[in-house]
Image (tube, rainbow, N blue to C red; front, side):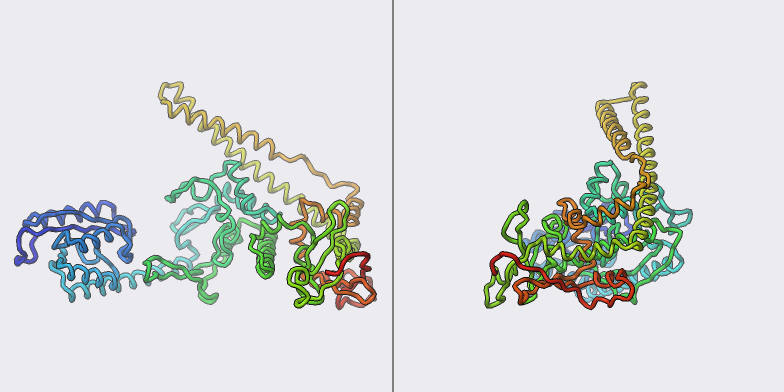
Length: 561
């Protein structure tokens, strides 16, 4: 229908249509184009091109169709742009004003089906109304979500481990996925990296959380899915709903005026809404705390690595760590790190030297004679060993050992049940495919799929057998075994396959091993950290508490560096 009869005939027109990522149907673009074409025909205008954007918000100006239209204006390919309404062209005041300036400069007029010819005043008014609409919509949406959270409902999105309940916004535990969640927490607390956990899940053919969603995905687990971001509460290891606690409003969002993309920022703690939902707990508190303790230890390690000028990730740093006390030994003269050099692992003649004196010279640190690596470790771990030899320490170890064994058996039982269920589902899939083949309803694609299913079923069955543990009984000679391990603490913790993790655990007890030169020609070693608190707890009755722990070590031979 013609809005302005004053328009001249034979105009060259480019049509623009758009639907955003809200509840609009993709067919709305076709509907908009059809209406614009009818309008052009009724006015005798010639449509020279059509530009459109689908599923992109009007607050962004990096839309492909919109950018192509801007280029059309610059090339003067038309003298009229035709669209349904101004908010289809843009919902951003700044973008609308710029588009109007470029169109006017190139002598191109704008025409909207709902309001006719668009001038500066009409464009400004429409753009302001569109901006006000978006702000009001955002406010009402957040108000509605806040009400749902207060009522104990979900504000949208379903975390892995849950499925929708009977009523809208309710969640119930997805038992099969809950087993995987507990497996992830258990393996992480035991020292596995997120990458190794993801690798294991992929090897076991466990579908990732993205499977079955609208996201384009390979269906594989990734380490970031597990690790996420502690501060932002993303990733499986940081989802507090797994301990029955929902935290809402952790982030706030705004549009970057340069890119038009949404940017998230952390809200202050007083803005958070916390709801206790014990019925949704998947992970017991002890396991959650163990995972959080490891995360905290890894975080401290990253800071230590960064402070020492390291650039490796913590997991790579741990793999690279050859010595139990790497990174902990400090020079008592300058406070800088001491590093191992000289000798060889077989002869045991490696020594700690001040890195500053060795690499920066005497103007930074005068240095001291090297101290045997084995002496430093022996002095440090002897005191730890003495504490662990106390009867109370063994009693605690026995209780912890029995609890760990019981928990491990329960966890393995859950995992085996889950594997049995996956195998049963795969067998049903295979049987249905075999029936289709027997009935003659098949194609080459069906045969290929059947073969793939058979391969996966064989793999699942083999993994089920491998995952079945041998029965574990509490050894009769547990006290002797315990004392043997503690007595050989240095040797046990220095083994290549445990030194990285052992070193990480020691950093929870020891913050520094300070080495000072002694007048007698040797060294004094002073320990710092929670280690001293533990020694206080295990010291014999009547003995004075530790203010610091200092030991003298003779230097033997070794050059001053």
